[in-house]
Image (tube, protein in one colour):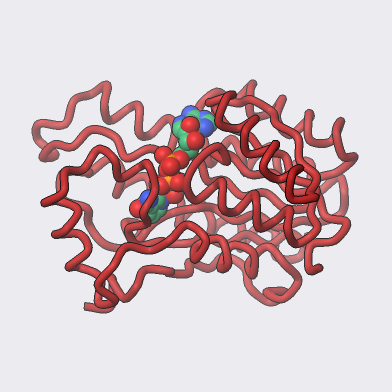
Length: 248
Ligand code: NAD
């Protein structure tokens, strides 16, 4: 298995893309810290992983809170002795409004989770990875790390920023045996899209040349590759898994 003996941490692992990543990491032999703000969902993912013969532990953390993120990394080391792989996945869609009408609180909420939360994750993960001699970080951005999402300025801004943060870490840690890459999924069929009505969903599907939404498992395969030694010369990059969305 390609992640045998690795210790991996996934934020927002109680649902959707994070859930699929946690399950795939475990299937490939990693010991997985399943973290989420939603305890019930996170614990149920741990049960699923264990019932399939994998190893996992739930740790509750709100990624927008730096103390909780630091405690999450410490809990990982307490549970499994080190941290090799971290996937900063937790994120929200946020308010839908034209930029001029976007509420100040709505803006701040998206920045707190989608940008600050990813920074806090990287900060404490990097500190721990330096202690254990190396590691890999995968940040979940979006196609909106490179193209607009009308009515979601805060989302687009944070996802572009995550791509920038990822490049900086690639530049800074290239010689420290720590790699960091970002992933840009197109629209993926997860509970995040529940806020959209059917008409809006259809319009989104039409924007993907493949004529469908993506599956969480399809994103997880790219994340697994970027988390494994198979991507050993890749850092500071941004990789799409978008059914062709950004090609047209
Ligand atoms: P989801 O809503 O299914 O799952 C997100 C999980 O994150 C939930 O379990 C939620 O409880 C958790 N979470 C939310 N806020 C948190 C916080 N402050 N601290 C800790 N956990 C928190 O969403 P998803 O579609 O699986 O999205 C996961 C990531 O993928 C997000 O960063 C999202 O922006 C990104 N993404 C999603 C899509 C898509 O179409 N679904 C496309 C591109 C990128």
